[in-house]
Image 1 (cartoon, rainbow, N blue to C red):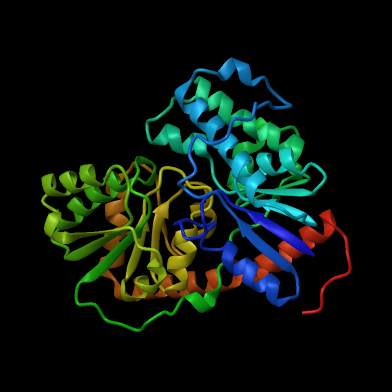
Image 2: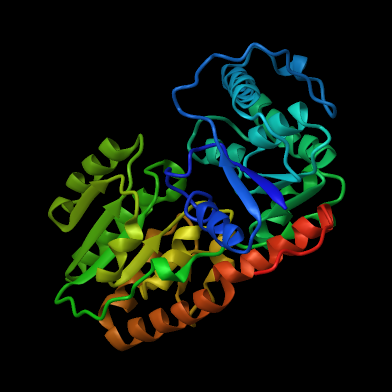
Length: 380
């Protein structure tokens, strides 16, 4: 079978899709299936001129809104780039972004289309203070789900919680299949180590939705209680200056290291002790599974896909979002009791190897691909 994996970002960008899809391609190619990756470069801006229409709603009521106009122009650019670069047909297309899915179906309506919805752009914009819930932008972005349902031959998503989230915006949510992300365990090499001072680490884009302001306030509470630690923050984003100023105000600057963007943080993570990320929302939260495979103890918020990965008190600790005191208490448990921390980390590693293996994703995707485009299976 000849398959195109249609991404939005190039696969060298941070995030769950980029950390998984190239390894899926490698495994399928070894099985004898042809699989290619496609994405739009960042340099392509304002090239597309196509008239845009949608089948399930009238785009004209949204015209003139800056955020929506930018989204539509990005769609036009993706159409322009795809038309120029793709010169062959495929047995099926598997898209990992709504713009990629809609562009592929517009240009190649005869090719079967599978769409994996990995996250919610509108929810990220709301949490980052860019739009308001129920506003025009929110209405437009949630209308895209019904358009995807109408256009795609099969819709997948990464967690039960995210399927629940999109259910109000589509007609048949039961038809959405959940395939959690999977990870090639060969990328992760746990290292036996003893840190004199507990090392905390978080990896994310530095945006309000990730709740790092809550983390810094929790760390200030830890310091006030006399606990020694170092917090390592890997990632970059628009609120980095704001976070650095907050760290100074909370007298934490000497306890925190800001690294900026790192392409392969999994090479760095095994040297630390506790992974913590108090996200305000998370469709899946790939970085938790990655941290677990590095044998780190996990602390996260009881939201979305994080709550599906962490069984509280068994393989990590869950706290409510927006609660620095609860987060401080959870981190204090991790810092104060090395045996407790070790046991949680081992349980997290065991679950991640079993539930979030790349081979499980390959098997599930293979079954979906053969349902959409039946053919004789390739010989491994």
